[in-house]
Length: 457
Image 1 (cartoon, helix red, strand yellow):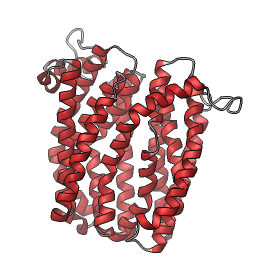
Image 2 (cartoon, rainbow, N blue to C red; image 1 turned 60 degrees about the vertical axis):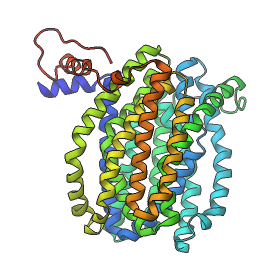
Image 3 (tube, helix red, strand yellow; image 1 turned 120 degrees about the horizontal axis):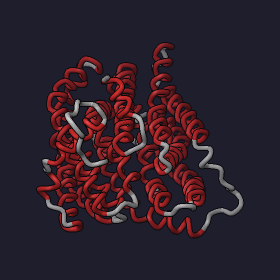
Image 4 (cartoon, rainbow, N blue to C red; image 1 turned 180 degrees about the vertical axis):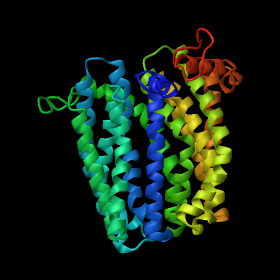
């Protein structure tokens, strides 16, 4: 009976079902990412782990810097302007070609400066990895947005799941063959990402049946794409800087050993916002185009329930995580356990603030999120330079925690001013429990004595 109820809940394409699917995918991605981190840490040691992280860093960082808001704009415009989907897709994909070439040349030229403290062979591998991976990451971001906007969340989750799954398989092959080389591991990551890009393009082939060469780009579509993209780009750029500046600080001020330690505890702490990230990824494309009251009510409930549930989970799991960190990665990684505690709390607060930010993006007002990001980033970067020389990795974690708290407070205040939402109502609503129980009864997860109540999500 319980199995039938769970199957019923997991089927369908509604908001709750999609969030559950994406949450399950997030958990699997986190598990795979953790396994990859364990294997690479065991294969390469702390210093080698730091060098491997440095090789991977700039491709991910630059993909976030030069996205120009196009993935988010694709979702927004596909939902708002029916019948122009092909032109939006064409504008997004064709624009990324010259961007990849120009940024690739810049990365190749300046990589010796960016990784000046690293060995020459690491710098050379980072050059090739960045130039080849960057266009694939830009393509993956647009493919994921296309899948979200067309409700192909199976493809969206597949892209996110298959990359770490294939990476893990490739690393396992290297480990079994005794090839303990960060350069071979980087090549594996390139090949597996290419395979996933090809698979996802095939799965979305019906949406990509476009006359790519009839005319370059429709002007109206381009105006809409880049118009909204320019408005969210600032938010996303600051989000990228916020999420990656800690690694830049470590690359600049600390050692490869510090980066190796930090990459492990940071990845382990991200386990705690799998559900919140699923909500953030699903709720924007699902709510874009709806009326304001519906958006605010849905976002508020998602924020409160996720924050409550994850806070209950995070406290005991932090201590379990420290035990597992020593057991799986090795005792030498335990010296970063304090940073792990701080990053775990930051993860929950940061995930909650991004759920709230979805209301501004869905209502076409990303400028308020941009202001929030500017303030939080300025405070966090300032604290990086203050705390890192004093406390090392713990200083970086403490600065991130302060920034997450600032983002949360600013977002709640902005919702109060812009949408006339009660602050107390945003933080607590006893109707959430009735809603949750009603949904569980409706899906027969718990027994109902009579008709189940609740609001459709």
